[in-house]
Image (cartoon, rainbow, N blue to C red):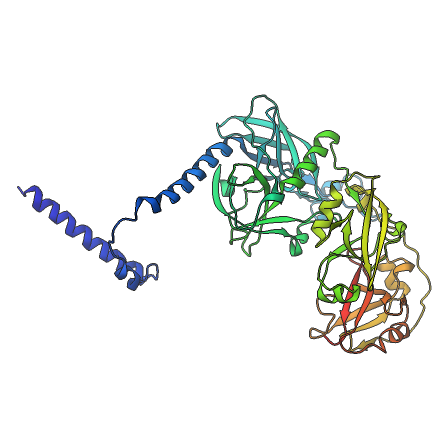
Length: 519
């Protein structure tokens, strides 16, 4: 029988051998560089004072998770199969043959049943839950599961596609809740925790920092509505499908955002997650609970963030503000009635500086329809102030209604023309083309036919869909013929900026495009 000492020695040798073998295997698969493994020494333990800070931070995360998680819920959505209803265009089916022809008619096919999952969090003890609109949209049945495994049926109180916020409710009392914080006071670099149910892994907690605030840009593509408010908090806390609707909390355990989107080429976490600021979500939630819908105040014009050439055209020394595009075709908006014009740059509202579109939207959002605001704009080097009475944003059904169109005879039969200064070719819009694109006479102009990838119009003007309607500066006048555009840009030299009012036939709205000649 082997002695205890020899037994322990044998086990130790085996362990060391296995460890070294593991390093070799890992290095062979490029998992652990062998050189670094050789350099790892068994130095002295770190002093207790140095470890204490790490321990305290870890305990803080534990405390926050224990405080927040009971109020986070898992949401299961079910949608039944639905027929796709498309008009037959006057075609008649013989009586008794409907079922036979239906199998060959894609317009009569049904949408498949669908299931989905997401997250939310309880904001009141009587069961109101804040989540994302895209989590519950078109749901026929909603089921909510709490951390303690209790399951409830939920009903939708209200949804707002323009902010991707929704409120649902479960019946009961005494539910655990989370306190809502103030995202305005949060700073880039602060620690945050994301809580939710990603990839079917219920009640998962991930940690990271606030990477940026006020993110919009390409995130606007997540929304269909032109009235969408896109103003995200960016975080590197891991967010995956199923996290949507869950809370993003700060180091005090207060919610500062509603997790909503990820930036990923695969659909899974790639290091960038986005949350809707809680100050915006809270105002939407209050409207949904009180009115069942959101009563949003608007200026009534399209706006976009500034580029360097936009600031140059407006006479601004800094690249800050919101560029005013066109209003709704055939309608006069509150901003237009007050005197604001396409091409203006909004730099302040009620004295509060405006740096970007999301900031302007959030300033306006705190007002109610019918209230008035003072708007400061820069117009090609001149500052103006206007009093605007805010209107109420139209509902989604109103936005879907078609605009009336009227056509006029062709104003010209000129051939396509190229403009090297702008890097585009254009041709007049014919009556037939205007009719097919549902373009009114007011939007008739020069159709952009091609865009030079090396010219100043690249990624600013788009072929086959953009129509140049008017030159705003210099020498403002309507553009209907090639000669109209000729006279506007013939005297411009390299470095000058020309401001164009452009109508997009696909998106059905106007915008201002500032182009710097020669670059």
